Image (cartoon, rainbow over all chains, first blue to last red; front, top):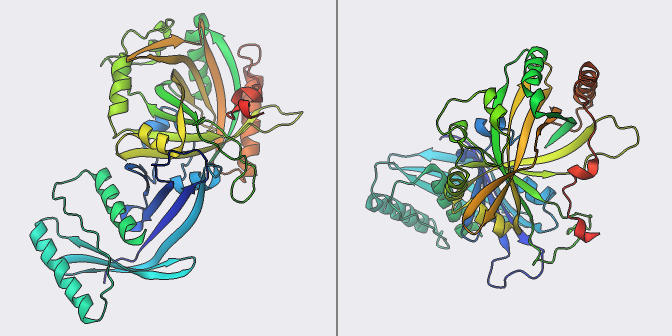
Length: 181
Length: 255
């Protein structure tokens, strides 16, 4: 059994009127402890990442004076006339297991109203192909079926390209959104 | 969040060299050249935004400022720069700096880090000797698309842009002094040009940053350090408290 991990997914909704009716009114922020607690903020197809350190260039060139805050703090504290927090789904003290084929992270997801479900985050070895990963995922799914867990939502990353650090965190956040949102 | 104590002044172009020497001795530190590009956004006027939030608290509309570093290698067209660089900057354009390229590359490049700042109006009061302002800060890096498209999704639109170039002195005590110039960035169609706002002189800023607004001890010692500096520099650089209205980032059209 490996490291403990946690996550928090917050949902914000715009309270501004006269927005474009085709646009989503919802914005999400996600923090994952196994991704350095960086905050990913997503609306539509736009996403930004807030690191937990101050990049030296920003400090040296007078762009930052102190200790920056995660972006969800900005939304709740300084932008609350436009953005209102509607929901928070949290998983704390999750466990992770390293098997021969997969890194499996397990956590209980809770919202204000109670238990939302069990979340499984499966990660392949970097050298594995998509077919190998798919086979391992299917094995886990049949195991879940055997113990009677049939109501499962799955979000699978089938892009095989080696992604940059930034966009891979965005991709991961999109999976959490898909299964929890 | 940072609590910023500050005093301001200005000097003429001719005083720059002597001023740098004086502050080098006073701070026992070399001057450090710095440069940044700031983009100020305001709430999208198309949106109807309530004056109160869901908890019925009054929240005023403020501008937000995004800034990013201008690498000194860009500024000097590859040449190594020191504080003497500032001596030649008395025109609208900076000869060695291609502002067009910089802006276009910065907008297209999504690896840049940006600071995101919202400033409260400085504290009011009759007997204030220095400016005390709360600045809320975050850092953004785009992961998908551009930072400006995210700001658009956030509900903000472009207001104005400017470039700051200057030197700063880090005092042992924690006080920071800066001598700098500001250029407005004007974008017309696809062409970008600069306009020097601080003609014939330099802005001077002395500041002390405290990370927690509840850290009264640091705020008090910072105030004392700045006021002592003001006395030390009296009749040479007259450091003064700025008009707090000038540091007000709220939109006035709501009055």
